[in-house]
Image (cartoon, rainbow, N blue to C red; front, side, top):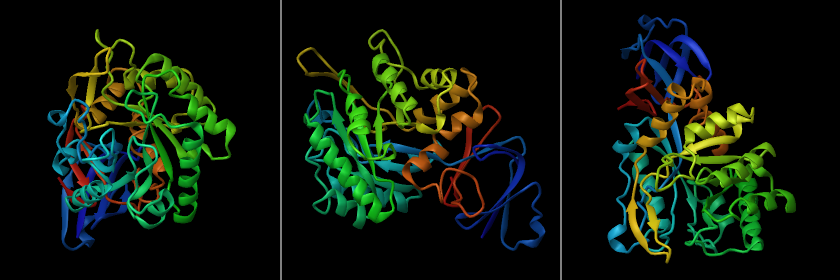
Length: 376
């Protein structure tokens, strides 16, 4: 019934200092300087002296059903496995479809989210895929938002990419309006999650949605904004205007890709420019494909990544770029929960919230993960 995490250094993600955390079933029951276990029956005590505890990490862009296929059936990637996500500290994921919305479809995505939930994760999904018009479960974006419990938004809608369906601005604004309306009725976040390609127009739809419609910025979330330096600079302008942006882990500048911006360098730039960190999240894009195309648009290679890169890059931001622990951790906990409008139960360590915790050693290596009160 009870699990007591004793003598840990706790980040909520705000620094709380040395604390005891009492978990009762799947909830946080107490966070105190000292919790005496004598008064509790059926209690497990976990010695966390010398350990650091964070809230469970949230990855808001994971291809849980697998992805790929741009180079034919042999380039399809594997489905996600719960144990492979949990061991990297991630306790909440949002499933997404990408370029392949045909052999990977919405019923498949919903069923996979249900499976991962039964195996220990908290799960949500976006309705749709790269495709416009959006293919939904119930026949409309609004109905999916209202009637399908796991649907928290639409995406990932592809823009400025050779795989895009070339939507017009009117189509994009109509999708955003439908999502906004569904969010009002259902009380959900109602995110329109945009995949941004390398095309120069990638961020322009975001600015136009802000300037030419009455749809609040809270419903718009572009991802892959660190794909190129030019795209990232436009994303910084959007952030300055009160927009939200999602960085993608795994973009590491190299000889073959010198134009991308690593997430930890992006975070350093955001801090150095004194921009609002609450508008920033990081996601892994795990289990999707990372294809390389030749000048004719043919796939010459295709790779995939797992969720490990999410905390790896946050840890690099802390240890190598000097970003404060509280700030770096917030982008995969508190900020992500607020963006998804699940901050009433996720994203921070507080009494009454879900018992999602990541226990690390002093070197920020993950030792244990607790998801909904169960230890992995």
